Length: 139
Image (tube, rainbow, N blue to C red; front, side, top):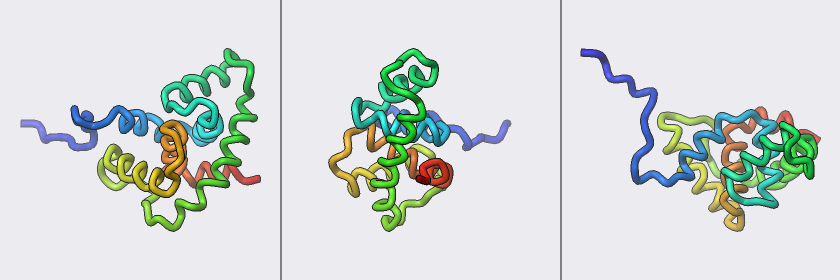
């Protein structure tokens, strides 16, 4: 009988859709995360922000530029990110990505209660990728 592989697990049927969106966001590169964090100031839905960032990157949404969104996101990260440093949230995921996401998102929204869902999601994803995000966000 083959051994059960626990590295991959399907989402629970009761898990909120925002958890799956978060798992996807954690896989984006730092540039896309900062662009999403910047764009989320205008359209605060994680899925719509992700689609809009891709449209900007491919030249289909010409009202914005990718470097402009990254800089807006970097400025936002420099403003919002430092408040998360003293919370004790781990910078890595130990065990389940979904549980790590849910816990970190709760802490982020507790520290910044006025954020909309897109901003909170992108800020949480930036936290998980903060070494790369910090390097890109340096003024």
